[in-house]
Amino acid sequence: MKSLFLFAWLLAACLLASKPGQAQNLALGKTTSASSNNQPSANAVDANGNTRWESASSDPQWLAVDLGSVQTIDRVRLTWENAYGRDFTIQVSTNGTSWTTVATTTNNATTVNEYPNLSTTGRYVRMYGTARATSYGYSLYEVEVFNYTNSPGSNLALNKTGAASTTQGGFPVAQAFDGNTATRWGSNSADNQWIYVDLGASANVTQVTLVWETAYGKDFHIDLSSNGTSWTTANTVTNNSLRFNDLAVTGAARYIRMYGVTRGTGYGFSLYEMRVYGTFPTPLPVTLTSFAATATSQVVNLKWATASEKNNLGFEVQRSADGREFTALGTVAGAGTSATPRSYGYRDAAPLAGTSYYRLQQTDLDGSVSYSPIAAVKIIAPTTITACEVFPNPATDRVTVTCNAAPTAWALINSNGQVVSTGTLSEMASASSFTFDLSSCQAGVYMLNLLSNGQPVQRARVVKAL
Image 1 (spheres, rainbow, N blue to C red):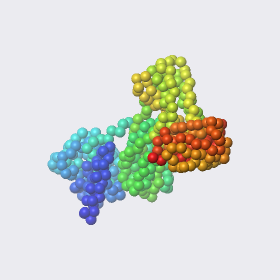
Image 2 (image 1 turned 45 degrees about the vertical axis):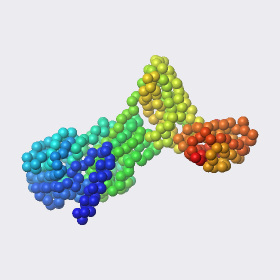
Image 3 (image 1 turned 120 degrees about the horizontal axis):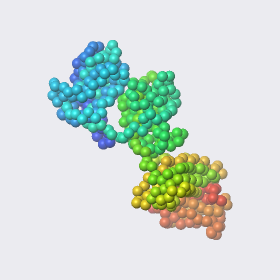
């Protein structure tokens, strides 16, 4: 059993070390001691949120962790069972005998406590409890010690509005975004529950931190959306038992959702706090009064307007299939410096099927860039589009296309949705069979659209071989 525990501890340590963006828990698997042990003190440093240390039912009581050597200590986390401490201190020591208090808590009313920016050193860390919150002993699921405090930036979700699948009375959605770990949101006692926050504008998200009440989520995922309707999963967690989850998330989104698949208890999902970290894009150095994308007959029209511009070289129109990775479609020249209102437009004649996301990359005369908010639009492919035949396929140079419609043009589109080649069929010998050259195209998969009056009538998948 000891060798199995050692293997699990080494594996957890290696996984943590492989993620330099996340602080390593210095207390994990280390030696512990306590004033009393109704449940073993080692349970508080095993990274298992379902095992716990429990003291005798009296005051005072303490639990100490030996880090093995003198370490920098900058952050301590306590995760309590419902038998939590009301009054207690966090202490450090270099010898396990002389103790220095680095944090003091009185009248505690939550089962999670976090102490960042301690800026201290020590080999031993101790929770010294002087008053219990219940008639039971002190009971800790986890004691975590870190040598630095994560600084992911400001909490973009703080005091923002949100929504949830269900809400228990007395535990509204807003309490997950109020910055107070003594208040919480709680769902009904069922799986497949969710809560999301509206940041008010699109942000480049880098991290989501969940602070659970004892009714935590076992299996859940973090989803991103630009419109609150279409969601993309950015991080998935299974078999969770911890009450603090610092989750790496990458993407641009206005709405961020925790979708709880399976509960960790018989109660609902319950969050003290859902924090979102990242940055809002630097505002355009122009006064952008509008930016919109509208779909008309398989074409997306982008329109935007400015009230004034300063050193504006121009706009690059960008598109994305997932709201995170964008590719350039084309450019529109700017007005330089102007105090006169101006209107701009761009037409995406070969949009992606489904939901697409558009934004403007504005470039200054000095080469610096910034971005507009994201506009989303959905294209529903008409059911009348049929397949045409292409041979040879795959091909290295020329291909022949046969069709039964009456197209007037064709467009070859790469996997990023960019038009790489076009042609007019009136220039060909036969509208029902024609050839075109692939030799200038890179190897990959393309979509060939046959068009009539600018609308797709037939299409085929074309593979360019090496």
